[in-house]
Length: 232
Ligand SMILES: *Cc1c(COP(=O)(O)O)cnc(C)c1O
Image 1 (tube, rainbow, N blue to C red):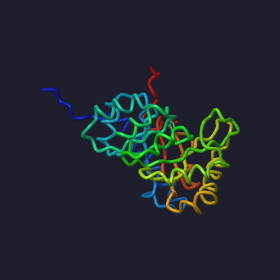
Image 2: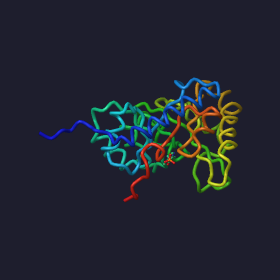
Image 3: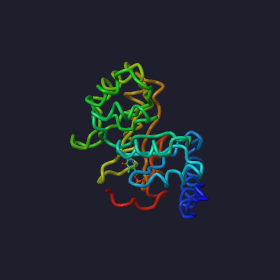
Image 4: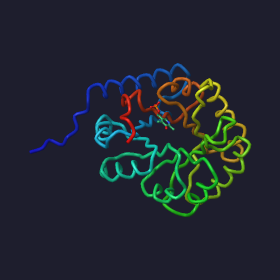
């Protein structure tokens, strides 16, 4: 008989433990409750078997960047208790399908995508992704557009606005960028959406700085999974 129970790679378990311990330590050092921080393990480009191994290690939140890949893994892993987070740029024509399995969309980054997601459907949690740069090609809602964009999200019956998401530019100081996101939440979002306090920020290289600036959702890939396979 084939043994199908997962035997996670000990190195995977070790890396996960190091990150988990680091999150607890960093939160405590910053006077924050570690329990208020959600670790989303980013599994993009990895096979579904890795997600299964992570689930066996107690991971409940996984992040994927592409619809095609996410929908396939979700189908293959039906039955596992996982929360699926979409973190990558989403084509508007895929948004309706993403709604069928995604629990959280971190990359609500433009009006055309919102036009699809604001239609009634399966309820989904969303973050508004900010563009912290002057380059409109990077995607994301410009800070000056945040208030009207957020009003529109709040008016959508089946979207629950959790807060703000951002990815610092390569040349940016992450701590400064994260502080800017926090300030936008406090100054622009809080007056119109007092419940939307979450901050999705912090990746493998900068999650400690993100915790210091108030991150509630860390999106960590390679520090836990190791190098990603070359994208097909
Ligand atoms: C890939 C990705 C991550 C994870 O990056 P790592 O450096 O592997 O931790 C986080 N957020 C987004 C938006 C990503 O695309």
